[in-house]
Image (tube, rainbow, N blue to C red; front, side):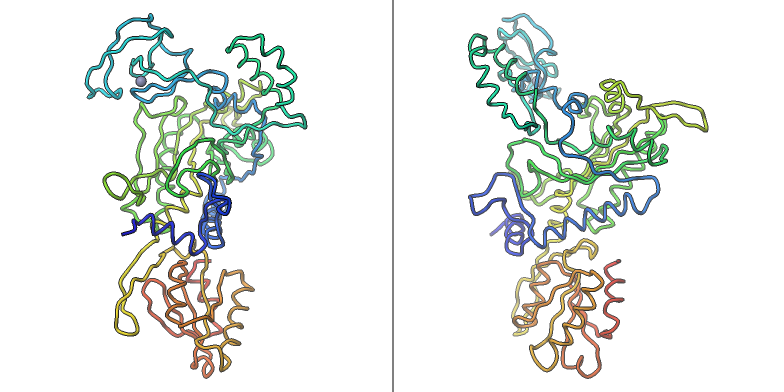
Length: 501
Ligand SMILES: [Zn+2]
């Protein structure tokens, strides 16, 4: 028996939601392409987010930043830290830390630590190796080699290939020891190195002053952005859950210090209810607060909105996965960028004559993960009777009409007696209003309904012999499979009302 995820992956490919990237070349790991139905689903999610976050409020403005930014942005944000400083993994508690900041212990010392770094773990012993330090979290001396890590995709700007410069410096490099050689190589590469952004958030922080000066905003206000981000993580994952290239829907909300906690609560609740409003099952959603030990050093508080995906694991099916993080980032980012650039990133309130650096509440959502969650949640199979008196499995995607890729399908019952002409007239009306619709005249009507069920199309309109007599058509509801007759000339208005446009 195929697992739920296997069925969803197969449906995604069969119906054109999601394909493996570069499939005819054998595929590229953790990269995916959205087909005709998938791109509509994801676009609907992003547009609904933008509409709810920007257009339906007067305290949030939009922004669209470059993917490649000044490399110093990533120094200030801390993303480049692991690049120049070697990092080490603790084999006991899995912490990754900077070697130069680890607590020093004399080589050869016997130390005690807890298994897994947990207080409930049994006591273990180990000996400190010649590097002379232990894990800063659990005190374990069993550590990986020191390595340069970089989760950012690096490329170079300018026409000269850095490899050419390295080749030119070959003689100089040969005279250096390993440490010196790495340092020199980094220097050469750094001259032209730029990075694909690992998050959209920094674009909002570095444009904070531009927006303050140009847009007549004042705290509390937000800056929203939807765009691609890149993280060089070699991981295998469930379909699009974790990919190197992904699309974010992020908003940075700038508030007066002291008002941050109330806004943090506000955004936790507002964002959770957004998913419910768009139809995600409430019992498969939760808000998980980060423990103090999980928090990034700059965050005062953080919570994840998680969805219970049907991922397979050793206990069967089902696993909580993050859809969105809501963080209280304090004034950390603005202060960092202010420190690196020397630019004043404070806000002066002309009414109270107060000057302060705003605190930031950040709801950061993933568009790909949201699309995957909506797909998994919409997926359903039910046993239905067939026309011949038997039974069959009906596969249906129960999307909320707002995010359904195709809103309505139009069928002539048969390809004669004026039915195709009437159907085409309905199609023309729908197309002229921009309602995404689909025309299908092939095969038995039951099969055509099933094909639309699988695509998640909420409504099907059928032109039959009665249409020719009285200009009414049947409208069939995807979820109840009930049909009713409506006037042909009222189709556009009825559809607009039902899909909430
Ligand atoms: Zn450790």
